[in-house]
Length: 203
Ligand code: GRF
Image (cartoon, rainbow, N blue to C red; front, side, top):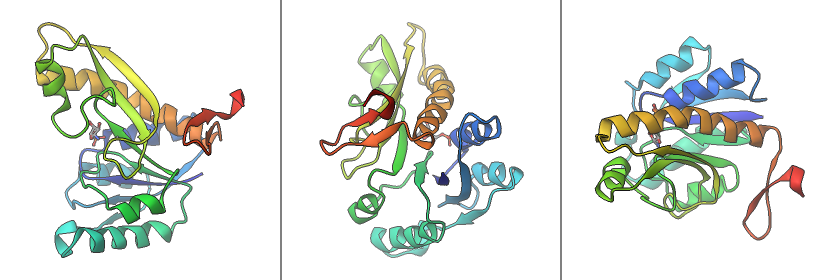
């Protein structure tokens, strides 16, 4: 499968996916990494792996729609099977999301449907949750609201701070995201008409 990854920062999830491709776990190829920030460390990770990169700075556009259209046009030159959001810190417009319907993934640092949006670790601590984690999901027009694909659960410890909890979740993201991408690249996931995604091997 042909993959495009969108990032804004460190790109440790991008790294985990690149490593899983390298090791043969994922049967796919990252054709392009796009960042909206020129100084994103993930761009260096991609270059080190010999992957093409591109910066599209949202500040150079006067609307969300015009930025999204530029990103869409760049992505579509690749004709990807899968678009992966890996710490891409922009909310995408409805048209963009619809265009990649059923072939765009995101990872969110909470056990969705809990804690959509920002500050998820802080909110899990404030609620005294016993468990927290991350979710890989398909992207739909509802922010952090698309069908869930993989969740990784971690314990919340009594002496946790936001930083220690975030680190524990982040470590699990690096397992959960490659796993979801592995399944999609192996054609084990199918979009059914009722909007539920099932393992092909069970159908
Ligand atoms: C992760 O915490 C992910 O859950 C969120 O953005 C962060 C990306 O981290 N969507 P990295 O850039 O992959 O290290």
